[in-house]
Length: 280
Image 1 (cartoon, rainbow, N blue to C red):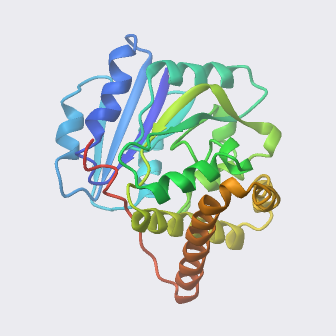
Image 2: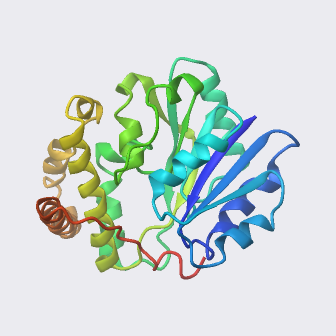
C-alpha cells in the first residue's frame, strides 16, 4: 500500500482538485491518503471527507506544516510514502511511477519533474520561470515539484520533521545526489504566483528556508546539489535573454535580502500565494 501525506492549511479552494486527480485512478487497497488539516479556519476538512476511502482526514489546531507532516507519518500505513502539497496536481500513474522507481532499491528518494502552469501569470513571472528552466536547480524535483517520495529505508534517515520552513529542502539534503532522483517519466503540475509581488514573497520564503538549513545543518547542506551561479553567468552570453535575466536577478536579489533581514531579526512567518489558488 502506498501512503500519501497531504498537509493542508486553509486549502478548501484546491484540495478537491488535488484529490480528484488521484483518487479515481486508484485500485482497491492500493492507496492510503491522509489529509492533515492544520490550523484551518475554512472547510478544507469537510471537502476532503466527501471523497471517502481511501482518504482519511486528520485535524489539528496547530498551523504548522512540519507538525502536520509528523501527524500524517504517525497515521500512515504503508510505503513507499509520498508527501504532496495540497495545491499541486499529481495523477495516480505518477504515484505508481514514483513507487516503482523506489522499489528498485538503488535510490531512496524520488520526485516528479514539475510542470509549471503559467496561464494567467504576468510577463515578469513567466520570464523568471523561463530563466529558471535553464538552470541546474530546474533539474531537482525535491524542492521544485511540490512532491517527494521516500522508501522505507529513505524515511529512516531522519526521525521526525523538525520545525523549519523548507521540509523538502531538509529531506533533499538527507541524501547524497546519487541517492535521490528526479524522474522525467513522472510529472506534477505546479501553479506559480500570478504576480511579481507574490513571486518575490514566495521566493523570500524559499531563500529563508535555504539559509535556515545551511545554518542549522552545515554538514548535510553539502548534499544540496549544484549551484546555479556559473550557469546563470553563462546565460548572459545570449543578448536575447538579457531582459528576462534582469527580472530574474532582481527578484532573486530582493528575495535574498528580505530573507536575510528576517533571519537577523528572528522573524518567522509564512508567505502564502493566494493568486494561484483563486481560480482553482
